[in-house]
Image 1 (tube, rainbow, N blue to C red):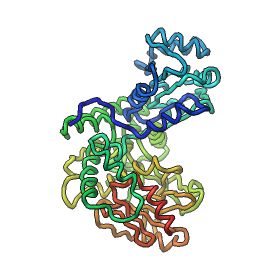
Image 2: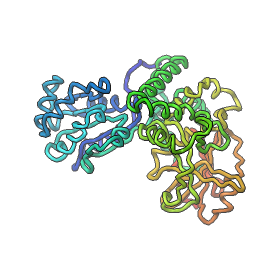
Image 3: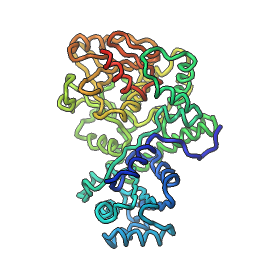
Length: 457
């Protein structure tokens, strides 16, 4: 196994490199849930491309005690005075052009957030990169002044399956997948290895610390311990940043996720949280979790149309976890469930496979995924994805049994609007008429493969 703690390559590094050399560069905020690897990514970026890295943590010690660096931003709006003081306090030279200034947990210091405007206007030659795990929460709580138009954003998600392959020493497999440009069966020698690796990914998930625990020890007990600690840290965030009243509601919604996804119809039902619960009681808790990056919300679409947002039914939605490994641990499901032959990913009525496909497809899309359903007759298509100006139905199957009455019904109803149907399953890659089957282990290439298939229609 590899050594614990060595850097695991992230595809977002290419985005950071582009930002570094951009002519009209603005301060950058890297958003994402806590522990998805924002800080380590920025530090590695600094080590690779700069002479010096000045790392400043602005995380509050508690509700009443700000970071010791917060005062340096509150005293002046002049960015040159700010970096002079930061340089003295941190003991690191901060020189425009050769230093990367990292402001971690920036959401905990309003003055630092506001200072980004002045860095953009008065000191654009300095590379300022910020990390914010609860930025969405901070910006929606109170009347904060935010430097609109003066910053760039980048979202960092848990490690993808492709990144996971690189971390466990199978980077060549990930490169092979990225170069597939013919819609035909992948040789069995590769398909078998990819499926086996995907079983591991469903157990570990993509949280960097969890992946690191596996590659270092090969012990699923170590992985479980990491995931349990992460879940505990999220619960602490609910209490620290939500307040006592919000904590109870946020925690109740969060803990209901496995029960919600275990249902045949995965539409979010408030009554699963507690009997008699209503939307007005828990909507703010769902928004809190979404803003914290911990859940993914997928709205129902009434029909496939462009723009897709025009057909949203905001009263009906499904709620997924940010990471399939965290969902497994939240569900207290043993990792061996994914290793049983013939039962691969079938636990929780395929919810893990759906969660994984959403986790993989989401970052590839310009528009968020939706789902489609009707009640009479009862049919549901797992997701709708937009490729160009086409809205494509997406069905997720957790095994090799791929029969789908709902996908057939959808095609009959919207055949004129459906140039391509997309199915994720354990079957090999194929294009049969207008049905594209994408193996679950190729989900990171889903949009690209769909576009290849569309070009053939």
